[in-house]
Structures are given as structure tokens and as C-alpha cells.
Amino acid sequence: MSLSPGDPESIGGYTLVGRLGSGGMGVVYLGLSDSGRQVAVKVVHPPYAQDQEFRTRFRQEVAAARRVSGAFTAPVVDADPDGPQPWMATLYVPGRTLSDVVAKEGPLRGRALRVLALGLVEALRDIHRAGVVHRDLKPSNVLMAEDGPRVIDFGISHAVDNEALTMTGRLIGTPPFMSPEQFTAPREVTGASDVFSLGSLLVYAATGNRPFDGSSPYLTGYQVMYEAPALDGVAEPLRSIAQRCLDKDPAARPELAELRDLLRTLPDSDVPVAPGEPASPAGPGVPASAEGGADGGTDGETRSGHGRRRRRVLVGLATALAVSGLSFVAVRTGSSPLSEASPSPTAPAPDTGGSTAPSPSTSTAPSPSASASAATAVTPPPKHVPWDYQIGGAYTPAAGVKVVSRSHESAPAPGVYNICNINAFQAQEGAEGEWDPDLLLRDAAGNVVYDTDWGEAVLDIRTAAKRERIAAELNTWIDGCAAKGYRAVEPDNYDTFTRFPDYLEADQAEALMKLLAAHAHAEGLAIAQKNTVELVADRAAVGLDFAVVEECAEYDECGAFAEAFDNNVLVVEYAAKGLSQACSGWGDTLSVVRRDAEVVPEGSDGYVHETC
Image (cartoon, rainbow, N blue to C red; front, side, top):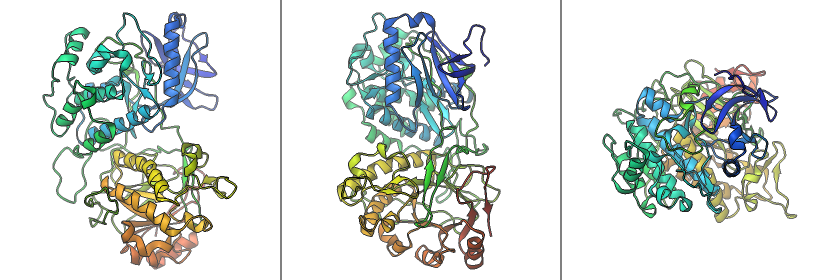
């Protein structure tokens, strides 16, 4: 939508190029930074800029949004809540609201519903960890991005350790998706209120109907407080889960950790699937025919490496973006003003597991976790098939490719077996501040130990207690991989101990990997051993299902991996000589590809992709 007469052409240094939506309190514009980065700029209407109560609430929104950071929320890039005309800029994602998707395409089913539910639980986890209660979780505040939902609009959220604003004479929230306590004690709501709203939202996503839907906001509020929810058409197991979320008593609702486990039981397909066959994607927002785009782009570069070739990640956010909504205070039951204006994404379908690939065997590697009562059957990738290594930026796989490895920040490629790459033993470059300081390896002087080749801080895996804490964080990434539809996970830098022998030992690396393997298997994901020929003999005891190996032909290691993993080995070489050796020695047995050293997306300078 173009700018309207009287709209500003710029604000805060951002050029405004069009309207994304408007509401009673403000307008959201599509803006461009000087570098060309797209942002969504929320600008408050001039009359409200003179309202000190409203300014306080807008300042609170900015603060809340800044505190929250996660894969399924919208990061703030800039703001001026104290300017003559308050504004806030968030990263922008092309995506329709859930309300728009359901209204135009019908309810979500199968994997689409499961991905939505698990993504929203992860978003609420990040929001609550930041000490924030959203208080307005509803379909128009959920954007259906191509790599998962985004929760937007913190306009009426508040920090749990701060006093909520008293809005005299105003109803704070959207009645069909409010909790009972929001009507009776709005200043005392906790994270349990968001769980109630999530229950209502999932019922709407699954049926197109609200569980509380009176003829007026006041009658709807009465239903929320005193009547049972209408759950007609909600199938099990979601029906039972929704009933628990919609309990009138906040203490009776499930905690997010339990809710995540419950939602994992949602079906992953729309139709019965024969044992061993991959599930087909379904539901609006994830069409099976969608093409996988360059979701990583040249702005996001992920480099993974052998002990001789190390790993680099420059996290690209150009396509992992979000637009902020406009429902500051709502008493209406209709759609958000953004639902018509937001552009539609072309979303890659969830991974189908490569239905045309040879049927792989099922791995039942024993889980070493004491918390797992039994191992979960997982499906490793098919053997000896064309494959691609896309951890430096995603792009549409070539015809015939059956297996793709991508960074966990990217969406899986449609129609193939997808492997999710995570950096497991070192912090991303510049991201050591995201880890607790005591989880970073330190030398005798107390200085952080770095892998200087790639500027990555090394994680301290020397004690069981620290390994458990590191695994707890890494497992959230694994959860994200599962929620997006990946079939396997590839924890990188297993061989860090070989580069820091003065500090780390092999058994410490294996102990951490066992924790990750147990969690991956519990999520239904196979898990790869990345490089580390030194530990191939222990692969079964650790619980590893297959191998991803860089330059094994160049360094004469392919045979050791092939024997240990029964030829379930994915080889990536970076030089013509290595490819020649891999093809001549292992081309009839293993999956082999040559990529450029930086693993850049197709179309980028230096891109190389060759096979035997």
C-alpha cells in the first residue's frame, strides 16, 4: 500500500515507502534504512503523542519488546518513544496474520497446526523469560512467517516486576482471547494468562471458531469468566490440551514446559501414513508446492568445519523479520487492520522426508538420558543419494537432491530430508554474551578461551553440571529444529577438544553429545556425528545415527566413517582434488558433494556445487 496524503516521508532516519496498516492509535509503515534494510515502523498518531498516559504505555511497549528476543518474536531495531511523534521500528517479515490465513484459507491442520502451536509455546517461553506477560495473544498478533509464527505487538504487555498501568474506563485486551483474570484483576495477571489466550487461539486456528464468542464484548467477557468453552470440532489430542489451557483457575493450567510436551503429541500429517513413510505437509500457510527460496540469503552466512576447517556463522536477519501490529487497546472482536494489508509469503512446505528417496533404515540408538524411559525410533537420512550442504545460506536444491543440511535459523527445504545444523561446543562469533559467563571456558588468568580462527568463544564442558546447563540451552535449538519440520540435527564442533587439549578431553565432549542425542531422539530427530574421526568407535554408545564429514577424502578418513556408520555418511569436499578422490574411492557408496569454502548460496560470488 502506498503512502497516503499527509503521511511523513521519513522518520528517525528511515525512509517510509508505504503503509502496512493503520488503526485508531497509529500507523505502521514499511521503511528502509540507509543500507536498504526493510523495517516496520509504528508511528503514533499526533493526538496520542500529547497523552502522557499513552506515552507511558508506548514507552512500556518499547521496553518490553526490547527485552524479548527469540526465534518466534519480533526484534526491535530502533525506537524513540520520547520524541515529538513516538515511533518504534522492528524487523519486517512478509507474512499474513493468522486471522487472515484462517479467514481466507480455512483452519490449519496436521503439521501446520503443530508447527504453529510449538512455535507459539517457544515464543511465550522467550517472552516470559524476559519477565514480560504479553496479555494480547490473538490471531491478528501472530504473523505466519515462512519459518514459523511470529508473535508481535507488545502494546499492552507489562513487565511482571513492574506495576501495570491503570487504564480507567478502558478494557485492556481483546475479549475472545482474554483470560478470566484479565477481566477481574488486570493488574495481577501472570504468564498463565497467556497460556489461556494460547488455548483460545489454537481452538480458533484448528476450527475457525472462537471458544468464547458472544454478541458483544461484554457477553464474551461473561462467557470467558463463567461458561465452558465451545470446543465443537476440536479433535483429540488438541481438545484435551485446550481444555486444560482454558481452565478458569490460572494455577490449574499447564506450565509451558509441560504444554510443549503435550503439543508434541499433535499429529504431524492430515491423513494416515503407512509406517516408515514420510508425512505430507498440510494446512494453509505451508503449501506443498511452495518452492524453497534463499531464506538465508547472502546476508546470513553459516560456515561449518573440520578441525582443520573451522566454523563461522554471521547470522542474517534480512528474511527472519517481523512487522509490529497496531492493537494498542482493543474492545472489538474483528480482525486486525493489518490482516488485509500484510503481504502474503511464499512459504516452503515442511520437510516431507524425501518420499522419492530410497527408504532408509530406522535407527533405535539407545538413549543415554536417565530421563528417557525408552529410546524413540528415528529415521536417519537415505544412503548414497545426491545431497547438498547449505549451512551458509539456503536456496532451492537442484533437481534430484534428496538430503539438505541447513542452519537452524533457516526453514527446511520442501520435499527432501532436512538436517538442522547447530553450533554445539562453541558460541557464535560475537554471541558469547548470550551464555552465562561461567559457561565460557577460561584460562588461568580468567580470560575467555577463543577459537581465534573464527572468533568463537569455547564452551566449558568440563563438569557434569555445566554440561547439563549447556545442553538445556542447545536443546531449545533442537526443539526449534523439530518444530520447523527438520528430520535430523547436526551438532557442530564435536572436535573442539582436539584443538584445546590443555583444557578439554574427549570423554567430556562425548558426555555432552550423549545429552544432545537423547533429547534429539526424544524429539524424533536423528543425530549426526560431525567430523571427529577420533571418536567414531564410540558412536553407538553416544547415540549417533549417521555422519556428516568434511574433507574425509582429502585427509583419508572416509573409510573409518563408512565402517563405523555402515556407509550412512554425507561427505562434503571443498577442493577439486578432494572431490576427485571422494568420487573415485567412495562415489559408489557414500553421498558426496563439493561446495565452496564459504558455503555461500547459489547466485553468490564464489558459489561452487559439484557432484560425482
